[in-house]
Amino acid sequence: MNAPAAIKNAEALGLTIEPLSPHIGSTIHGIDLRKPVSDELAAAVRAALVDRKVLFFRDQDITTEQHLDFGRKFGELEVHPFGKQNAEYPEVLAIEHGKDNKGKENLWHSDVTWRLEPSLGSILRAREVPANGGDTLFANMETAYDDLPEDFKEKLDGAIAVHDFANFRQGLRKKGLSEEEIEVYNKRYPNPHHPVIRTHPESGRKSIYVNLAFTQYIEGWDRAESDAMLQYLYSRAAIPEYQCRFSWAKNSIAFWDNRAAQHYAVSDYWPAVRRMERVTVIGDKPV
Image (cartoon, rainbow, N blue to C red):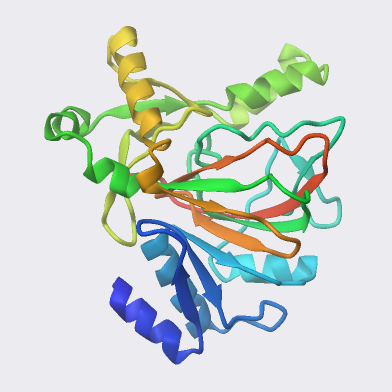
């Protein structure tokens, strides 16, 4: 479904799509996630997601079960092997920061690109937020690709990058796991090789698909050349024209397309508390 058709269909279902910035991000009005989401409504939301890269929903006082039900309308949900999980609902990832745990997601990234099949999208719900601060920025990596110089596009055509869960591995060591125990994770999550420029499986649009958190190097390139190119590509997410910025409130929800967008959680609220819960929809192998 193309963007005009998606908007028209959403309007027919009683939804209003309000853009937050020209290139990325829209707030969806007219949906109550406490109620079952029909297949037709989910299709309209999905089309809007592909078009706008991240969708925002305000005042959604939902239960954990309703959060999971909404996520499952878009695919199977993952269990994050390294994060703090809800014992009763393992698909729910708790992201909590406060006085003794300063926010650390303040770098541009796309979620779980260290998986062989990274996520389609993440659905983040605010449970408790600081009085001010703690915003999240999102960047449209399709527009960032469109604006690359043509010689860069040619050079990157077919290039493959290696990804790794290196930051989480360091966390495992800090927790006291032995190298033998960590090797179990290495075998379970081997380094994937993803295209530097991926093609969206639904829209067919190309985007920059490397990120500072998980990408290691471009395969087959001289390391200095790889590092220089990656640093340049990482820097594209920080260009304001590609971005939107979302200010959270309790019971706000953001649903972003990890295949086409990167995000940055601003860590400016310490020592205040910020408690979020995320469910993540499993995606497919990038091409």
